[in-house]
Length: 417
Image (cartoon, rainbow, N blue to C red):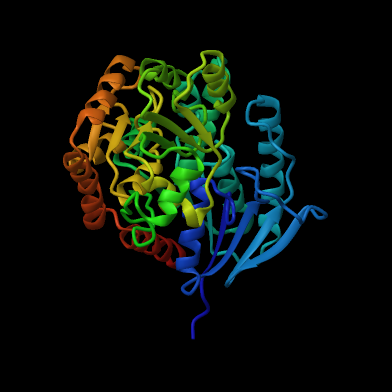
């Protein structure tokens, strides 16, 4: 019997981390573990404040079923501090390369675009040190993403970062991007030059786990009661309250609905702009906004179904740079979407193609208010059908099985070439 090809995933977030990429990569690895020998190099859990009890060693060896997991002990990160972020990122970069070097017989190194730029660089360096193949999964294009929110004003830093990531792309044996608009961004990077081999594979959710559930369900109803959300029209945002979504400005529209006691804005998650959002709510005495922590993975199917509509948003300039993964969970739950997304972006096209929501351009705050009012006045049957349109589209075109089989094909092709 031929020995299984070994894939080493260097992916920062992995089970039980609550980061969306961590959940996706955990899902992928568990589905591939019988066909490949898999090692995962990842940080200790901590994306959403998860507690870690193993902090005595720099490298901790763990196992998830048949998957070997090398945990890196990294400094705590304050997402509101650039210095703290940089300390965390460079610690991860150095320790991940050391852990990768220590791994024996690696046929393929699989990296993602996290941390920005350096995630891909780990694969580039590892490819030559280990004489292996490299698959580079770009979940977010950086530094384009950072440039969209003016994270740095130094043009020289931007140019160096682009050059490094273009190098990562050039030396990768295959690149996986998660949206057709991202494929166009890759092509623009290489105008006049050979475009690296790449494939588009959508992210996913477990459509068998997350399904439409009535608000009368005991778990959904219990969630509503616990957070004083009964008999409310709920506009929910569930996910990272980070820098790339314009949430620090979107929160201001809640003032318009001050007198609507039966409307509730519910933000589920953590992130760099959460405190700024909370400060605005407190300062302006906005009474219909609720901030909740990340929900346990096994409970997300209930919290998603507590909403009447879901916000799926991106900052202006993010088209072709990133695809908000939360859209797949919302579609699976059969909930209508209010998309704040640029025309031509992957998420906008999914919403329009499935007829599961309303889409407006980023920073169109007046339009967003009108869209919420439209949803609020919509009869419940029409509202429900709009959400179920998304579920139907996901079942036919975006099933988890489809995406994972595409990943499997790429891994087989690269590992056997």
